[in-house]
Amino acid sequence: MSEEIPSDTQQSSADDLIAVRREKLAKLKDLGIDPYGCEFPVTTTPGELKANFSNDQEVTIAGRLLAIRDMGKSVFATLGDAHGRIQIYLNQKGLSETEWAAYQCLDLGDWVGIQGTSFTTGKGEPSVKAESLTVLSKSLRPMPDKWHGLSDRETKYRKRHLDLMSNQASAELFIIRSKIVAEIRNFLHDRGYLEVETPMLHDVAGGAAARPFKTHHNALDMPLTMRIAPELHLKRLLVGGLTKVFELNRNFRNEGISRRHNPEFTMLEAYQAFGNFEIMADLVEEMVCHLAEKFFGTLQIEHKNEEGEVIRTLNLSRPWKRAPYKDLIREAAGADWFDLTPEQRREKAKTEFKLEIHDHLEDYEVSQQVFEKLIEEHTFDPCFVTHVDSKLIPLAKENPEDKSIIDVYELIINGQEISPGYSELNDPDVQRRRFQEQSGGEAQEIDEDFVEALEHGMPPAGGIGIGIDRLIMLLTGAPTIRDVVLFPQLKRKD
Image (cartoon, rainbow, N blue to C red; front, side, top):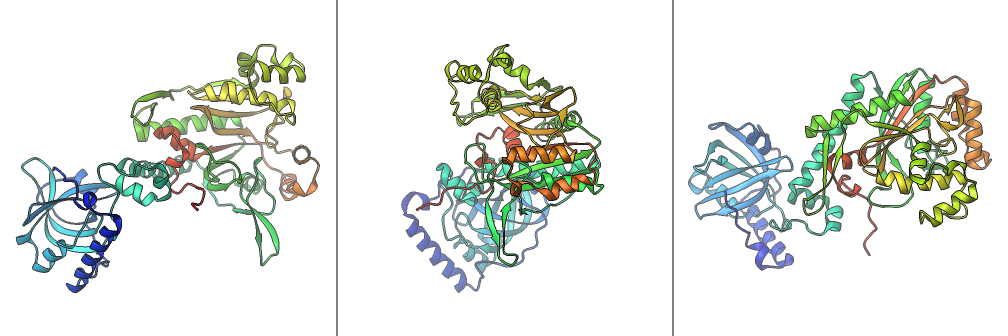
């Protein structure tokens, strides 16, 4: 069906359009029609009907008017929602006098219900011939320009409802996100994991090195922080005897905003008693490949620029590379990197690699800067980086053969960390010492309740975290986290 550019987007200002629509709102009321409708039971949706179309079905559908081609006494229009759309045909003879008068008061963006019969036009377009029309919601503001969509990126993020109604690709991305999250649950349930919920308000921020959001509970008269990670509570459940647990949770970190960071984000954390970091790496590799094949039908994931040109194809084919942290640094920074003195490493990072090395950085942090800038940012196909410096992660087990490293992986794909995984530290004395080192010896920063829980005995375990927002970016090729979070945090407009 051909679609005309609606005249109201060509001629009038937004205020004029709203005034005209309010006049039509008044006319609907004069006709005795409630412009905001009521219950309207449907038999199918526009998308489902089109996907399973056959002629001569009696159907009742509802949706938003997305296009209208008015030919006087007959009309072709497009009815749809975020899940799909279908063509409808209205004829003055086929509707009651009141219904036809109601149609005259409709605009693009209005929600209507249609009862009718399916048929195929002479041009082969699946359609529904309307036998009754019900007004469900009068739209007082015009939709974004049909032909140019919502071109302003900031408006797209601030007013996601406009983005969803005008950008089918954006709507499809969020639908697929929901399905991926549901499938992650199914994947873990099928492997015996129990989904749990842990607190989002903590009296001690723990489980990650991050700045928390702080608040105050009035009734208890005590300071609290928003959760930065659920790890310490999930490990308490291992102590309690739940041997496979996971949580899909919202975390909050009072830190920077970038194309890869939002102050609140979705994280999967899972723990398996009697496992280790290698078992958890296998689990993550299997899960991500399963999701890619189920929802995208391939392990070759294309990432495109705004012009639709492929800029990179990620190869998720198994097995994924696994490489020790120090070996990767030696490849990038020189085979003698760890034989140099701390002062020589610092100088080489500054002069040869042009890295910003601040005076306050510890020696292990200098090597981490080299890793992030020379390795991580240039690693696109999956790589499990294993056995990092023990000072970087205080909640993982030391390697039994080399106490300077810990038994962990960091999964890097597309130049960013997608998932960390640990052989979890379960020695309470070592854990207390690590916390003290991390907090500079300040006792109030140590979660003594967690250490006490470990003293009751936590089984050896493997654990993982997966940033769901980054995973969706990876699988869909979205360039920024704001494209995969329905309502990203933005600076307030003045």
